Image 1: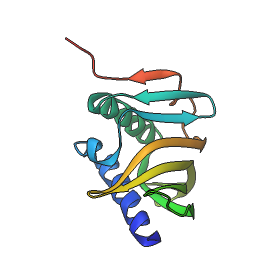
Image 2: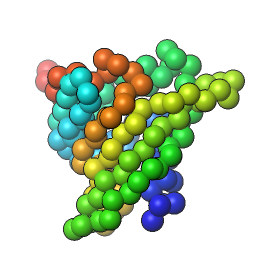
Image 3: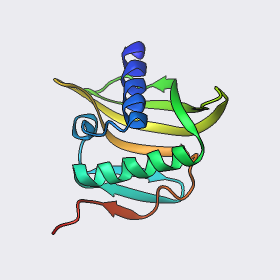
Image 4: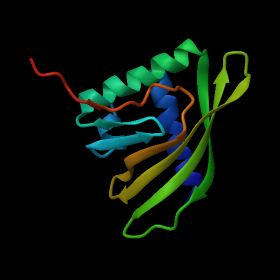
Length: 141
């Protein structure tokens, strides 16, 4: 199970950095609360999720991050197909220099179509100010 989870989060990070955001709805359950030490963001719909992920991509681009690597420190035993995953992310720049990234607890659910994240809790945020008290949703015309 551990190797499946690592592959899942690595693939998700690779897609995100490549700008492949079309699968947002398959990766996360909505609404998606994202907790951080300094605030809470709630993503209500796929367009809001895309907006949030683009903010993350812009932050990494400013710092020259070209790759992310997850290090799973713990996986909770599943109960009713729900469990938490603790990940310490490593950020890697174009020169191959590694730096500590965010530390995140993912609240996950295993369903018939794979793993979905139901809530995200940052315990350490590599981009302060990214998570604030806000709601990310599509703007109506």
